[in-house]
Image (tube, rainbow, N blue to C red):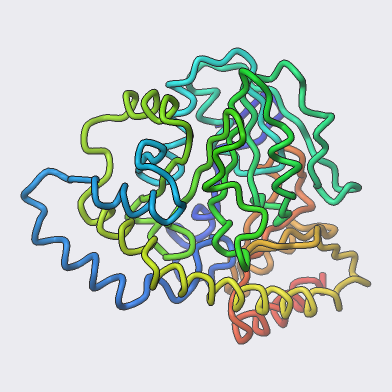
Length: 351
């Protein structure tokens, strides 16, 4: 799907490793490596004995509500965050939706598919891609922003995002990567004091469940009701419900918190290694706070192709509104993988 300025809103990182990219080391997709863990795979497998029955999401919904200290009426389970974007685009009666870019492109794609004319607020590299609240039109009745933002890895202050709330406005915050932030600082999930707030969470990134499709929406009960009416019957499968219940339990929350600190350390190692390519013109957008980093460098498209020849997949940045072909996104991986990648990057830059 292309817009009038050529951005392919339906291009995602998995395109880099499909077909002939299956043998590449994957730094293009932001799903955490070494997942899902054995205990989670076994838990999901145990649910297969119940496939003859229709899915019953009550237990999983209650578990998500308990995780965030909310009543169940404020929770909707979805087939990943992507379904939630489609539901929002189809169910909400809005006149002037605005998406804050650069960010995950699926919200805008879903809004356009539903017939909306979508406004854009383009954050600037010179400002570190930080939120500029004054740039959001006052009459916007739907505002979408990611936190931490994909692909910039910027973590916006929760108060700054909450400050975008207005009477009659729906404020959608995509927190798909928030559990990769130590302490989930700046999270808005669980807040009930921000009018019009809708928070989206994904369980596919941290737990390696992209193929299972599971996420959820946190919002006011009346918004949840509107979205639920737009869903088909039994939208979340029994295995996905089992995964949801497990991934929001105390054991999983503690494990995710530990992983967030490890990701932060691995990200620091990656950033330290990237710094040595400064003389080659490489710059890192930052400060990065997510499980990925955004870099700018001359001839990035050529470097990406050269990396591919060397066995590495990285995410092109030019499909994100606000970015061009000089940008690449790199997933954070363990130190051994990072060291090997940095060596390959050095070779790719010898053009």
